[in-house]
Image (cartoon, rainbow, N blue to C red; front, side):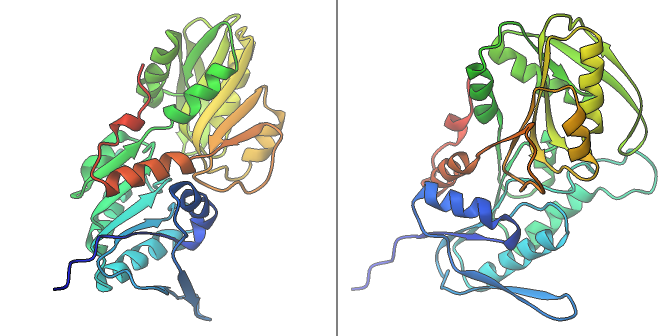
Length: 315
């Protein structure tokens, strides 16, 4: 009598995140699955699996940073896995793009993060795993389970080993207050807030500090660093107001132009990021911390139906 085969874990990668998927596969202890993308002369492409996924628990690793081909490739891989009779399909999205469009903040605009959630669900995903969403409530846009990992388990140990004597945690804008408060709890530290007013996207009109930063080792925390305008201007303002040192910890290094030029001349000791997005170029001020071990542990717990809350750093 034939017995049912046990479920197998298979990890696959989209072309945009292969560098990270390979590290996750090593940390998990399985080879990265064979998947390829056929590209046509007109720019269309067709991803496909080069091995069976029937009855398997499939984890597809792909951040959805620009270009949008990365998102569409992920959708096609999910669809391919569904049509190939995968048992369970988890999209591992270290950086969830389009998350900054999460509400109607002016008339006649799209809510892109909700649309992307709908597209992933329609493609056939059964679970989402991601890290540091721009707004935690985006989890509610999904009708499937979401495992929302937290970069504190990566950043906090690094900050502790710096042995800074007079830490102050700062939020670079009002939207980052909750995140800064969570970091402050780990160090029993005071907080400051940068009150920022924008003329338009990626253009700051004015900034002011709420709080006393004189003589403090300031840790700025944020989820995304894009053009680096906010972080570098905040660092200048903090220094002018007497901060002893300034470091920035930003999970996702989008780093679009002119970010690298701004960082190189900014009065910051370092900018620490995760490897959810590959750097476009090297900078002596940018330090990248790995996430592969965290994602591998989370994947293992999802596969074995264990809680992932043990991966969250406790105060």
